[in-house]
Image (cartoon, rainbow, N blue to C red; front, side):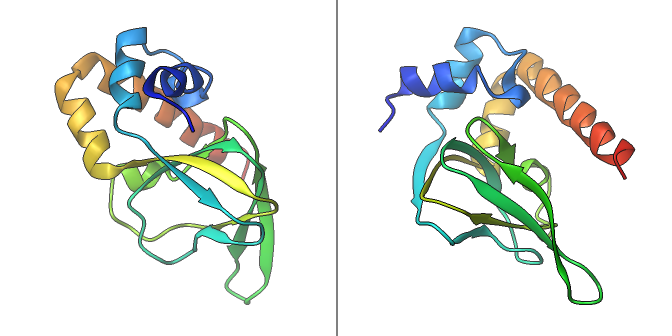
Length: 144
């Protein structure tokens, strides 16, 4: 189990938080909780509500999207320091894909409410994170 200092050090390696200062990472670290998932378990399910961001600490997942014809297609795979659910930090819309563990997986989870609290306290952090989210969204759109 991570302490808050270890959590902050880990967050520094996550692309979404790469531009943050040490004090900002430490502030965010206080807001994350750890969750463990067994193999072959859905962490999030396409179409269901979502309330937060997940960062993989250990383990691996497949990202599956159900097409309109009912076929499930793997659209990505995640491992340590990869993150998903960033859209759920900004709105309460349904999940756009399912994320399923391929082995026992440990995640750090940040709820929307805790994220908003951190952003309210530090406008500079807000801008840095939102810029990275926009960059990631553009990369995703360009790949279509």
